[in-house]
Image: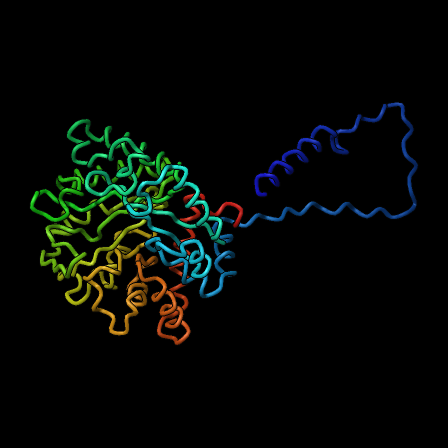
Length: 393
């Protein structure tokens, strides 16, 4: 309908232009008699008053102002796509996005994936972020399916060894084209962790070089993804280092702040022009020099640091279903803690429990609705930057 309206408007504009306006009528002959003066008072013509269009910022605010509390809260959840009732849950919970895993692509053709994602989007009042982890190497949700790509995308380390950053850029562009064709608009990449030791848990997924080289790699990938209109997610802030796997338990990072300042934080320092289509994912590591008591994903101090670095985009948690954070909310409302800490989006499998808890926290006064509004506005701004809100604002 939106495309039809645009075409109709263009046709009307063409007809008006072809037929002309009063100003384009032929000039009167010089010999034509002058019109008789009228004794009636002539009212001056009313000036044309141009009605300024709303700025993108005002339009975004208008969209936010028209949303209910459940709609705003739902936008803060970038959730693992469920095996059942996925279409229904988009509408029921007003979800911000679906994160797809290997099972969502297994044995499917490209058309299967396209049609499935289209069904999700059709159910959404505000278009969804559709994300995937397609890092290359050991984490390849899409290209693991030979129906979607003949071979798996290679790791950043292997690509760089063969062709430097040019090979990285070409590979990123190919990923972006494949993901976009399937209806995926966010890739949870690049991995911005600095790791130079093969014994590190994160090493095979990282660029594998020092902070300066990793920062160049991150900028190259982000620039390519920005140009291709695909959202990027830098992970895992504030830097994974040599820590253990937080999928299975708590990892305590005892490195000094100086290490972060001179190394781990450098790849996360993006300029304003880079950040519009980029989000940052915060790890579950307990970083003692920043907050000795809470995982980074639940720590206000860690999120304050991220903002101090100049990042104003979407900050999101790593998956809250991981064992490393399960014990931190006695009543199970870990998403409330995450939003209070400064996250704009929550990545979780348990959204059917967590969304009602966040709504309840706002209604009871435990969580200020202004915090929800700030987070939701950032999410909407990310969607706007990715071109998902056309026709809505």
